[in-house]
Image (cartoon, rainbow, N blue to C red):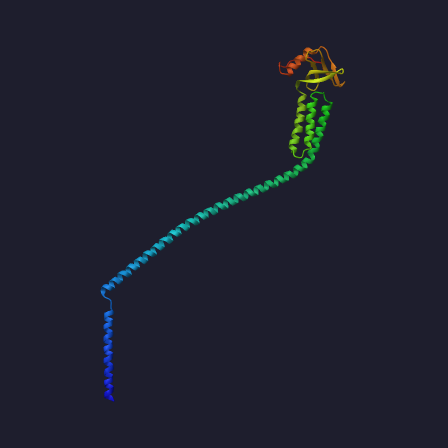
Length: 262
């Protein structure tokens, strides 16, 4: 049994040795050569350089993007500041307009109160003016009466402002006031002793009113005490001069015309 076991052991050892020998030969055959190792190292170095270059490009791109985004942030920040300034100015304008609207509303309310006080007074002034014309020396009756009637109609119109109504009334009073210190010549028709005469009228302020026919055959003056025209003789020459002065044909000079004592 012992011999057999030794033979068996020897056989196993021999098989193991042969196996180890074969394995060692395979390892020797699989080991890379020096050239292959150098190529591998070069390839690894090239690959590493390429990767580094790619990483640098990536970094450069990121830097460019950061610079671009930084500029965008600065621009947007400036735009935000400008927008805030514009909004503040706009708000100030809106506040100013609101204050103006409030002031206008208050003025309109005050104006309504003023209108309620002024309009009746304007109507009273126009009525007084109409009475003055009616009782005054009868010159330019149609023109003056028409002016008063137009103002009366104006006061009833709601689309006309109170200031315009006041202006027209004041203007009428100014015109009437001017009559008291001016002279004027115009043509009109008068009634003397029941007869109609087409005459040229000379107005001496508000104190004298004289008439003369074109041929000078009839001269007359208006009597406020008698409220009518009466014939007056011996004034034709002076009346001719007065009419020329009123028409600005000759310079002003002394006029001798009779005045009624009232």
